[in-house]
Amino acid sequence: MTDSHAQEHVPHLRLAVGFGTDRGLRRELNEDSFLAQDPVFMVADGMGGHEAGEVASGLCVETLRDAASLAPGTHQATAQDIQQVIEQADRRIREATGARAGTTLSGAVLLEISSMPYWLVANVGDSRTYRLASEGRLTQISIDHSEVRELIDAGEITPEEALFHPRRHVVTRALGTGEDAEADLWLLPVEDGDRILVCSDGLTGELRDEEIRGLLSTRADPQDAVEALIDAALRAGGRDNVTVIVVDAQDVAG
View 1 (cartoon, rainbow, N blue to C red):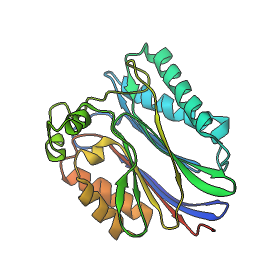
View 2: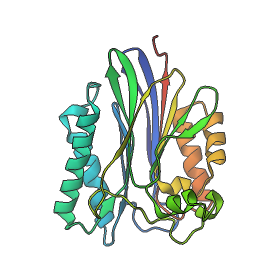
View 3: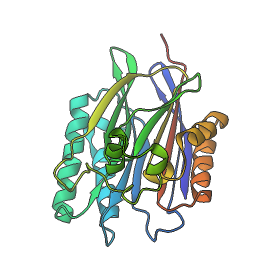
View 4: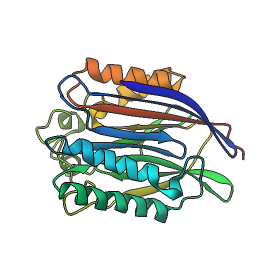
């Protein structure tokens, strides 16, 4: 498991960041990759045999890290910039793996628009981005691109049943493979006291949202929250790689 804790500064805003990843208890490799450096906080969960998933998620994160529009400390990227970087990652993975491997991508980019901070949340696949508001309400911002999400929406299974469904890991969108790699995007004003959680399905496949909310709400330090979430996922079975990023935003100037 790797982790770190850092204080980041942007205009009108103070960030505290924690992150960590673990192979889990049943997987030989960790095919998750992540980037947690202002302004990018994203998780990529690779899929594909013979280490190809690790290649796909690694190329995705490398593309994010190399993008000039997402250079550390800059907050002037646009939604179009983010879309173009994600499309570039999709092309790089297809070229490198022959479209035989793919990756999810979920997370938030911190932007500044008219001197005000915003989260631009992007999602492809079933990794997730949540927001814990200052009053304690946990909201999943991203929408899963998965077979079980479609079954839930159709009323054929419950969210509880989805945790154990045999098709729970089948995604309907991914970068680097398949016919659909389009990212969903959301633009949200940053609010004082926001806590953003980005995670691979190794967390949400083991813990229900209420369990996640409880751990996020009772650990003031973001790194403590990350470690508590990963430990809980491992205790619940650790069937998959688990990666978690927690970002706290404080002191937003009105």
